[in-house]
Length: 259
Image 1 (cartoon, rainbow, N blue to C red):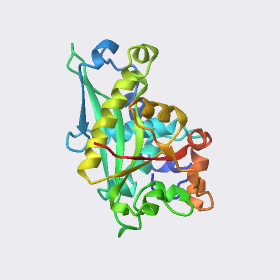
Image 2: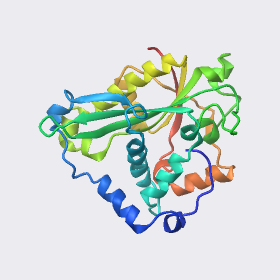
Image 3: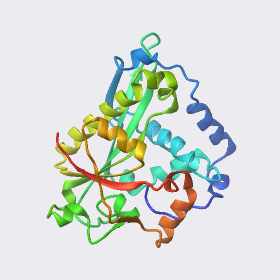
């Protein structure tokens, strides 16, 4: 998420009550989805932009992120924040989605999403650093890839990983659906990263996501010298807006990309 000043009152003057109601309807977990045992056979991973699913992917992430806010933020406000992220606006990222088709009705629903930020050399013309994480985290004495002599353009960042609630119910978990969707997204993301000459990947995650990555055979290493840049007002505000996320002390990890 790009650092920008946001007021909690944004929800009262950026968006109407009607738009908030529409958001609630759009992301209701009561929508019909395939049975757990059917998801694995009826799910594909797509490029969100090429397939026309980018707006829904962004809104799904916004809906999940809004749950971390305290006091609550209108999901439409969070959507505005995410869609104005410079990495989204200026083509600095790729979003992958898992789409599951109901075998009886043919209805398609989004069953997962993840974003890959594409590194580039130094700060770009919009003032954005090589990776989104570099806006949020300070690493001493320097980022590991730089210490290893690898340029910023050969790095990437995994983020905004979401599996909607209807695909992580008790029944879905028992059938292994969340792990299947996460693996499908992750494996496609690694292939995409390799196509963009990314050799080094970073990710800011909590322990439960870390455990999930390990099940795929990836062994991310913690960057112990990393800390949140709370001395920067925009970062401090972001931490304050989303205590449900930052209060659980997510850590910065790194791993090598092997397609």
